[in-house]
Length: 328
Image 1 (cartoon, one colour):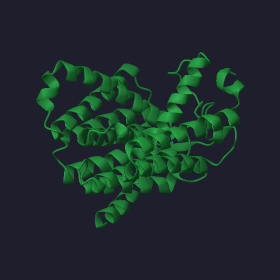
Image 2 (cartoon, rainbow, N blue to C red):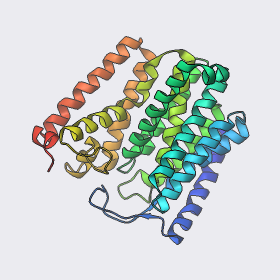
Image 3 (cartoon, one colour):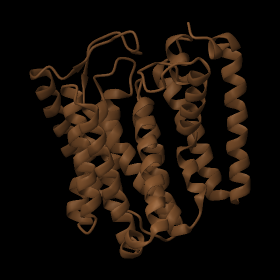
């Protein structure tokens, strides 16, 4: 707890210093037709996420250097992308490198690095994992579209992973590293979880956090040999997959920027408060997380299936069939 309090204080000061830098160098997010906000806002406030995580690794778990470098690389390229638009090939190349470093760290932690490298079946698994994790990272970034949603959802996910490793008596990340990460989310939440946000996370925040969460969930799956932990991203996955399906039906390019997610519809068209919508997504994910811990896997899957049905019914009712299947 002492580490958490100290981290809160230091990260709060760091965030204020970053705001001065962002204001000085005009690192801002200007509203456009895809935005869910209507005022110029500082971008990149989520830089405290990778900083807190990397510092935590260096001090409390230095053997996780592949992971630390992967987070640094993806955070650095994302921060540059927040400032100037980078070449897609360069950005994707660094993303692939970071995910490879993440996988290498997981293999080293489990003592299967050599076997994974030289086994042809493992190479296929690595390729599939690369595609899957890159998909998660991009989906997580796309979900960062309204005030509070990234910080609340990430807070629920990180705290859940911390609780799960304590409950199962395993170690994925050192507890002190988790406390630093939680402290960074609390600090950023102070400036973002409000009607008029002081700052947005930016790619540096959402993408770096996505990579960290990928590591947490993948490690849980491998250590426990149980795929159910993928549902720790269940609500984000549900909204992302459903939105992609709708865009495909409407014959839209799924790689183009958009605001077709259901959370964006609730905030933009239905005019629900951003914090309220973000809170709903975080709360529903919390319910799923509790079911994963408290119930057998089959019942946890049923809980998620119930949320899927509720989501589909609600989306059809509020958006209407015409909007879902016709591109206006």
